[in-house]
Amino acid sequence: TWVPAILSAGNACDATVSHVDGAYTKIGRLVTAMIRLRTTNKGTATGQMGITLPFAVADALGSTGLEGSASVGNYAGVTVTHAKLSGAPIEGTSSMRFYYIATSNTNLVNQLTVAQLATVFDIRVTISYMT
Image 1 (cartoon, rainbow, N blue to C red):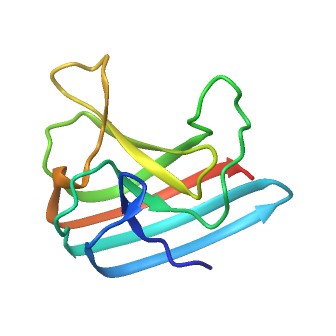
Image 2 (image 1 turned 45 degrees about the vertical axis):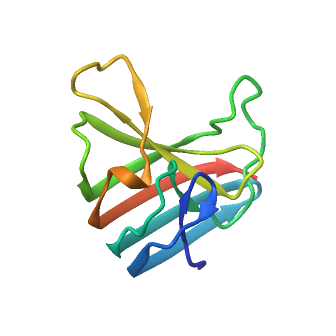
């Protein structure tokens, strides 16, 4: 296990976390991780929302820095109107970032920011990536 932390623009932020769980399996270079995170205060950060991962993310897909994908299960507390929430591990870091597709333009992927979270935010994620 490891303890995931919420990030703002790749840096630690001042969110108050009430529940956090992280579990992973690593077979060779493949990591599959499950995350549950709940905040009771999102703090003052405004940058792109992310969560730490247990290992650094490799450059497995040379044409992009988004090195895999995440399945976002149950979540609550996203204040921006959206059709879909997703996430991706970021090459060269030990973190993932979140993205949403707006209902007004389903062809445009937007970065989810900490400012777009409600005070109480709760999410469950499963993510796979290469180290």
